[in-house]
Image: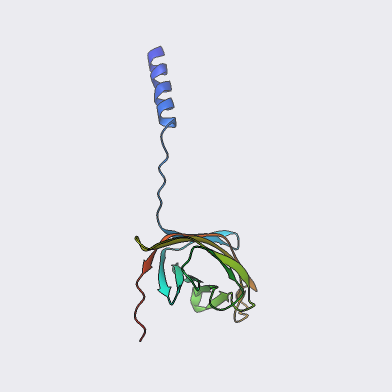
Length: 160
């Protein structure tokens, strides 16, 4: 009986020392009005000198736009070349929140732009304004603790 008890203690000790495996999968996620929001699909495209990072769910689209690709902080609510836009098309009622020239606030931070593997990583947070004052949504949409991690950079389609 002592041998069985000793064996069980050893097994428990060994399994509790098991190394936790974490995966570093690409993603776009954040707290949308304090609720976890995660994109099902995501991509980035070089547009001019900047980036457009897009995260999608079935009915929602998050678009983060910068005017450069450099690793730095891009303030939102300053101009229309650095913006955050969130579109909710649930039940065919399109609801758009956006930052722009003197509209909303926040930031996009590019922490890694990988030319070799064609990925981009960073963080974001913003308060975006209900663009059309649609009564279906509130006046402001808040995103906090936003992260885009190793989002693939796709080739931009040629302008037509």
